[in-house]
Image 1 (cartoon, rainbow, N blue to C red):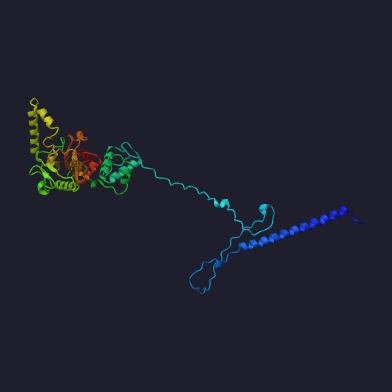
Image 2 (image 1 turned 45 degrees about the vertical axis):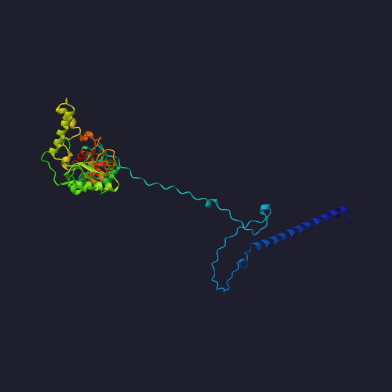
Length: 396
């Protein structure tokens, strides 16, 4: 039975479609094989013998190679070929692994907890009470500054002891036991009361503390016999002073000269009781002459504004010097400025200042220098005291 032309055509078309599918599959397989072979060639390492740079040295026999350690290869990560295009097929294209965010992100560490700081000691002052006051008092007793008992109450005696401790140890002597004072007091390195400045040169002379006619200092020397004239001129022949003070004066003036400051003169130093009285009498006579209507008492009162009564002058101690510059007023000169800045380094203080006039009883005298010793001079200057204040605080 013969097929109709339509059936023959349909059968022929089916055979052609099957043939084309087989053909396409074969072509695809060939393409995959060819691509894989090409990629294998690309992945092979280059020939290092061919790439090495030529050398001019003669070839040498290769030493017996020692086996090199074989590095453990990093396993390649393979992705299906064509996956990016939506169809499968395995291939050898290495794929760089994506870093794990959990591994690349640093793990935050907890902030260290700061160590607790020691509580700062409170400032102890008059009126304070407690165990810390008691410990303070005991430390002052141990160092010889306080003779009272440690009762835990910060009273006047404790305040005086703290002030003395501060003065001896070079602190601001305000009587307040702050952190700095307490730290030094309990350090084991503080100076004790018996290490206070010597009192040899700390005699206090003023209107309330007078010397008598018979108070004559020992160890007096003529200044000119100790210090040469190129260091200091002496206005009046035979002027004397305490030997230790004169030697300190020479060191001070020599230091000034080495820094270009010179032309010093000693206008006055040691005076006897009688010589001081003569100065008073001469001043009274001058006031009476210039003011005929004034009574002697008024003239005497005016005299005492600038001239100390006999027995009240520091010059009688042999430790005081009136330092001047010949022919000019001393105040404001470079000599005065240098001495005021450096005198404490050599044991001297500016004895009378305007600031302390009510305590000293004398008007300011920028030229009047008193020897008290280096330690005392530094304490007095550092704390801006006058000698009266220093004597009181030191309990001398």
